[in-house]
Length: 464
Ligand SMILES: Nc1nc2c(ncn2[C@@H]2O[C@H](COP(=O)(O)OP(=O)(O)OP(=O)(O)O)[C@@H](O)[C@H]2O)c(=O)[nH]1
Image (tube, rainbow, N blue to C red; front, side, top):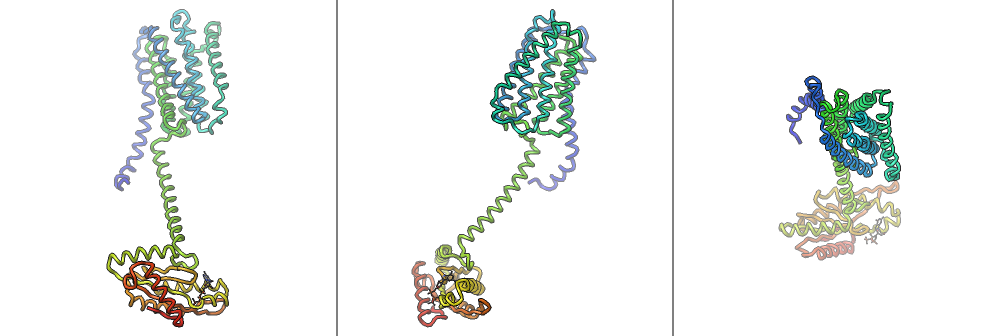
């Protein structure tokens, strides 16, 4: 637990650090714009790096990475069935398939510039659209196993991506490319969708770490589109746009890998703050459950050791106590005595007033005995109407005094039965551990024998 002053200080700077955190995130998201602005202002329009091999190598590397990330995302989806991940996987497959010809046509870029260039914005538009649809499906219930196992949907999308490739080729090769500034509109579309995605994430307060990586990558994709729009083929802004897009892709792929290593779903990977809050709630639930369990255990233990009718210890528990207490008394050299106690003519009570009245007598008797005893004395119900009382720290002589007090207390008890007042008496036999025997069984027998002597001597008496 943090100490109080530390918590108070934390409270004071909490707002400031929260604002600082938001500013940091915003600054991080806008870092690419610094480069874009710098290049836009200072780049010479003549400065180009026409590097076919470099471009090919970059495309091959990016296709390998995007293919791998698409596969990991698909595996994640197969595990969790999260619709968001299904669209994300489709987005990654889409960008991989639609972007591939961009690399393929690098060599003929001088002859067919549009054919070479169009695949870039087309692939970004396809990916942005699919990521955006995924965002609209965020938090929806998971797909069924049947849906997850169905390969038809994936093959259909793959065919659609190939058709898009062919359509882009058609647009570039036919006069259609002159009808509309395709590059501009596709790139602007990707830019607009990426920005809309960022706005939705922020507006809906999707602040889990993985959704932050998602929003950050969208911000990078949007800025990559801005850089592409401002660039000319092969100039530095154009190369830099590739770098921004790749960085956005890396950020998003990091989110996918984190999901893969944890819950397999974007919506169930929580931030530290959320986790701590959940932990706190879970902890309080656990503590409450533990308290309930302890109370239930205590009740169970009480029930297992207590006679339910009278509240006296049951036979098993009384025998255990007698063994423990007599052992302790022997070790400490202290006296300990035992009373054997039986209601006189109890059968007649049952016969005359009924079994229920007999039960009332048993309860009243135990209450009366307990009022006479000290807290650490133990009353046990050994049989039907036979009781025993264990008296720690009590010599034979002191036990005789106590037994007499019990006898007279019982004799004076007014027990209300069916509108009448009933009175009963008890006979008591006394024995002391050590003095009358060393083992529990022997001492019990001596007390019992004395009880029967009390019975034979006329009942309602104590035999010591
Ligand atoms: N109401 C009630 N009666 C019980 C219970 N357990 C035992 N009894 C009765 O207790 C009576 C015991 O009678 P006995 O052992 O014959 O002895 P008694 O009538 O008390 O006579 P003495 O012990 O010789 O004075 C029997 O009638 C049992 O049915 C119980 O839980 N409730």
